[in-house]
Image (cartoon, rainbow, N blue to C red; front, side):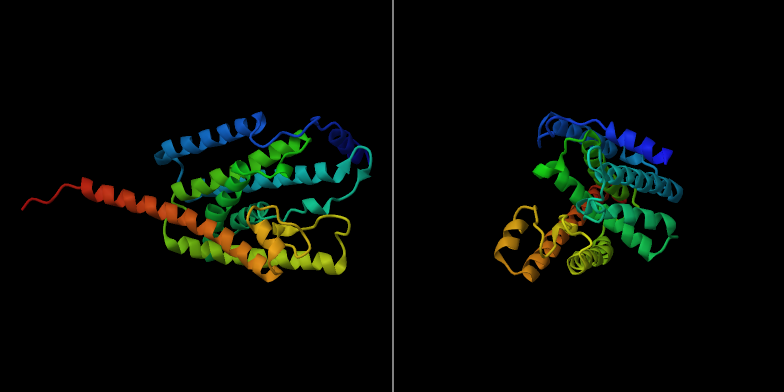
Length: 280
C-alpha cells in the first residue's frame, strides 16, 4: 500500500507543460539535431564500432532493456491521472508498429545463434529505422504531449530504433544483401496479422470499449493517421487498405536494404580499382 502511494505521488509530480511541443518546434529540432549528430558520429567511427558476438549481444541487451524500462514508465504514466486515479488506457497498449522492436530485441537476446534470431535482427535493422525515422521526421500532431516524460520517451525511443538499426548494418551483424530483406519480412508479415487479430478481438469482446484500440493503425473501425494510407482507408474497402499498408511499409524495408546493398557494391568497386594490377 505504501509502495502504491509512493508511486502515485511520483506520477502526480510528473512535470507537465501548459502546451505540448509543436512538430519542428524548438524541442523537436533539438532532439533531431542530437540524433542526427549521433548518426553521423557512428558513420565516422564505423571502423571502431564493436563487432564481436559478445559486443553485439551487449548492445542488444542495452537496447532491449532500455526499451523495456521506457515502456514500463510510459504505461504507468498513461495509466494514472492525479484527479481520476488509475485507469488503463487501451489506446496506449504496447503493440503499435513502433512498439514491437522491444519484443524482437528481448526475444533475440534469449536465443542462440539461429535463423530465428537472424530474422529478428534483420527486422530490427530494416523496419525499425523506417518506423523510427518516419516518426522523427514526419511526426503527427498527437506525437508530442503535455507530459514531459512522454515527449522524452518519444524521441529517445524512435531515435534508438534508428541508431540501433544503423549499428546492426555497420557492425556486419546484418549483412548488406537481399537475403536480409527476406528474413526481415518473415517477422514483419506475421506481426501485421497479429495486430489485425488483436483489433478484431477488441471488437468482438469489447475489452477496450471506450478507447481507441487500433494496433498498427490498421483496425477496421479505427483511423489511420499515416499520410496517403489515411486517404486509401477513407475511399477503399478495408482489405485494399490493409494490403496497401503491408505493401507501403514493406517497400520501406526493401528500400533500406537496397541502400545498404548499393553502398556495399560501391565500396567493392572502389576496392577493386585500388588493387594493384599484377605485373605481366
